[in-house]
Image (cartoon, rainbow, N blue to C red; front, side, top):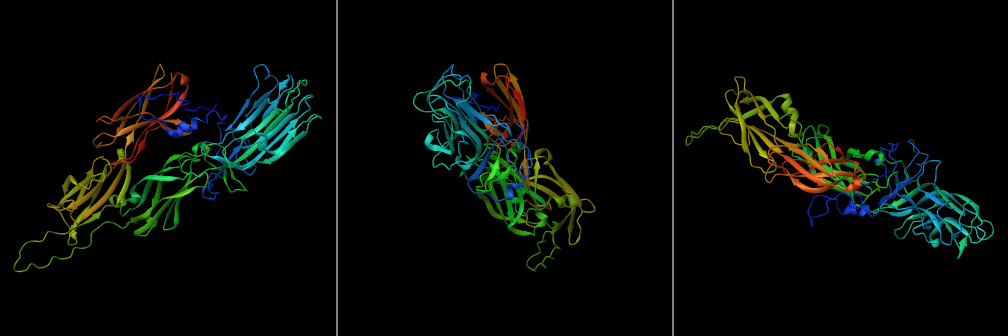
Length: 588
């Protein structure tokens, strides 16, 4: 059974009255459309898993119910998500009438009105499809059957309708037994109308007329079946991108560097594809998260061009994206980087369009220009001009690197020269500026040996600029003989969960990075609901040691159920955003 993480506020956070609902307005909107059917657990990646590069009809996508299209090479079973069954029969009259929204290839959904009891006119059993809350029905196809028999008193009626249950909204075929023995049976594929207003799809078995349908020996008065449905949905959500960072965006990027962003599709079917182009050439084109297979298209609708999916929310609405780029394939200099995010409905946005610079040649200084001969009026000695010849490991670092905090320690080594010869006994110093402050301070220094060799190590740290300069009176702003590198750092984040009796969860962990800055950063706890991570409880600020603790009171409705949780911290000027490994806890 598909269970939402917080149905009707089943989990209550420890935030005090008056604080914003931590689950958020988007989750409340989804909960209004809860209990839409049973979501089958197994959805395999299919032949169209890499189909993001194909064109799709903008603003349209298709949800497949019960059975995947024949062209799909994966499993033919599709979900019945979004479908439900209901009736309006009084207690005691439901026997021999029933409806079920469960389906699979060869096992259709069904609703029928039985004939063991006399039923009043207007009695109904029906199936109902509710589209996702932010999409509307725009067409498609439904394959099924309808049939009725003579009730002996009043006509039995069976039909499909959309966007309402009203008979005036019927489509495909109308089966009315009248008083002459039924309309026989109809089966086939009917076109679902493109509604001008929001609504649902119905398959209805009813007793018509103005009196009642008499007992008929148990034979069904009316029956409807749905074998499969391809439901075209309209959604005009605009994908966005925020939080752009990474070594590729630093000046003079070298080697393989990343650009990181958060791609979102608020109110849409989710982030399906991210494409990056440099100077018009594609360097990245992928679905960043397959969402356990739900975000893999099972085909393309031949009529509309819309991508087809098995789930009502196929792709994640928020996804962190890491785009690696090998800058050695680019010439040194300026390039135009463009990033496009496309959702499952084919809506696209250019979220980044800016210039980057690359530099991949070895960092070493040119031979020094001899100082001018002092004039008779001046005998001040000119400072020597030094050059750096870096070892291969230091050269491979390039001008920017992205590392996790445990690996943020960096070592620079090489040989110092002056006038084309090695320079022994010279001071070489390492300077650092935290984050985007631009304020450099000296970390450490050394003296070159007899062969001019030197080595300096920067300890673990947060995002920073690092510079190596030579000379006893040199500073971080010295323009000559300087090695410069920007290091972007991601912190570590741990999470432990204790499940206490009384439906209480206690979250503890540690944010690993130094310095933490002031005030200390904030950590959020997220729970996985409907395949998406959503914040629960209140924000918690870490202690000076980086540790945190949050106590969270759940609901008795969740006793015995298991949920996945993770801790996250947002990006700051000193580091990139990070998340812990997901942990599972059972509410006691």
